[in-house]
Image 1 (cartoon, helix red, strand yellow):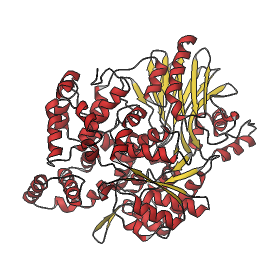
Image 2 (tube, helix red, strand yellow; image 1 turned 90 degrees about the vertical axis):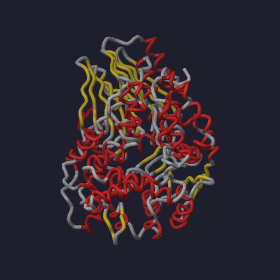
Image 3 (cartoon, one colour; image 1 turned 180 degrees about the horizontal axis):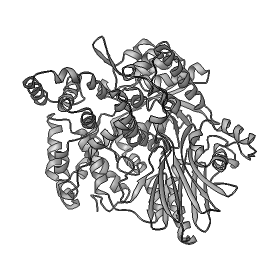
Image 4 (cartoon, helix red, strand yellow; image 1 turned 45 degrees about the horizontal axis):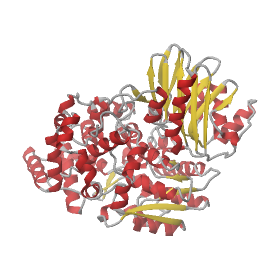
Length: 638
C-alpha cells in the first residue's frame, strides 16, 4: 500500500511550479507510505510516490519505477505477481527486483491493458509512456484502492485522495452542490463524483488514457460477463467455494512483514481467521469494543471465544467515548472528502492499535455485499406477505410504528426503528425499496435541508434500477447484491477501510473480494445466500453451511450486527461542543448551505426519542469538521 500522485501537461510542465506541487502532494500522502518518498519528472509528466514497504523491502522496489520507456507509480498489491513474473520471464523479460511493481511494468509492456484481466489483487496505478507521451491509469475490479483525477485543458492531475489530487492540480476546487446532496442522501459521495467540482473518481474496474487527444475512460471488468453459468449442484458449489476462499486467504498472507486479522464478533472475519489458522500460519487477531456502551455495540466476548477456539494471539482494544472524541480531528483529517459512516472512528482506533503489532491485516469486508449479510436484505423475505395484507391493516401498522420512540439503546427501540423502515419501504417496487433502505432521509426532507442551495434531487432510484439490471440476472437477490457491490461497497465500506487504515500505514486485504470468490458467489442462486429457515431470516446462508465445521456453533447463530459506534452517546458527550458549533443557528444562516430550523428539529427529535436523527446530525457534523480541518472556503468557521 502506498500513496500516488501525478501531473501531465501536454504543453509542457513548468519545473519550478511542478516541483512545489509535488512536494505538497508528497507531504499529504506521507502517512500512506512512511517507508520512502520518490518523485520523477520529465518535460510533460511528473509522478510522486510514498512507499509502505510490504513485498521486497529493498531499494529495488522503490517508486516511481522506470523500465524500457515506461514509468509507474502504483498503490496496492498484486497477489499473483510471482505467477505472472514466471510467465513473463518465460517470454524473455528480465527482472532486477522481487517486487510486484516491476511485474506491472513488464506486464504492461507485454500485454498492454490486457494485463488488467490477468491481475489478482487490489490496485490503482498510473503508467507514463515516455516515448508516446501517453498516460495510462487503472483501478481494481471492486474499488479497493482509490484514484481521483481532474482535467483542465491540456492538464491532467491525479492522486490517491482529493487533497493530493488538488495539490498536483495547483488549486482547491469549489464544492459541488450535487455531491453535497449525495452526501446527505447516502452518507457518502458515490463514484465517479467527488465533493469538489470537476474532480472525479476513476470507477472500479475502469482504466483511462490521457494524451494530446484528450481523456478516454473505459470499463475493463464486468461481473456479469465473468461469472460462471448458474450453479445447480449445491454440494459441489459449496466445496468449490471453500477451495476458492482458502486460496484467496492464502495468497493474501504473502508478505515480507507481519500479518494479522481484524476480528469482529461476526461470521465474516471469523471465517478469515479460521482459514488463516487452518493454513498453519501464525494467527494474530485484533478486536475493538466500546466501554460502557449498550450490548448492541459489543464485539469483544464472542471475538474472544473465536480467538481461543482458533488458538490465536489475540488483542482487545477498548474504546471509551472520550477516546473516540479525542481522535475526531485525526479521523476527519484523514478523510479527504466528507464521509459520514461513523464506524470510521472505531476503524481508525483499531487500525492505530493494530499497526503497533503488524503491518498487514486481513478483513472480512465484502462478504455482506457478496453473500447477502445485511439486515435490510431480510425485508425482501417478508414483502410478499406484507403486500397481501389489506390496505387498511398496512396503514394501521404504519401509524403504530411511527407512534413509538426508536433508537439503538435497547432491543425494543431498535425493533421499532427496523419496523418503521420496513413499513416505509415495503409498498414500493424492488429498486425503490432498495434505494429507500440506502437513504438517510427522503427527498422532501433533503429539499428542506438544502433549500438555500436549490440543489436538484439525486436520481438514486434510477441509479439503483440500472445497477440491478446491469448484472443481467433475473434472480432478485443477486440483482440487489450486485447493486450494493457497485454502489455502496466502493463508496462507503472500502473508502472507510482504506482511509482509516492508511492513516496509520496499515495495509488491509480482503479475501472475500477476490474475483474468484465473487464470481463464484454470483453464479449461485439467491436462496443459497438469503432465505427463511424455519420462519427465521438467514443471511449468508451458504457461508454458514459450507464452513459450519470451522467455528463454534454460536458464531453461526449470533444475530447480525454492524460494526457501529454509539453515535447518539458520542454526540451528547465528547462531541457535544463540536455539534453545537456545527449546528449553530446563526452560523448556519451565514454559511448558507443548510436550513437552520430543520437542523434544530433534528436535535429536538433525538433528545426526545421521537426519531433517531443521530445519523442526520453526524452527517452535518462530518461535513462541517471536514471543511474546517481542510480549510475549505465553505467552512462554517469562515
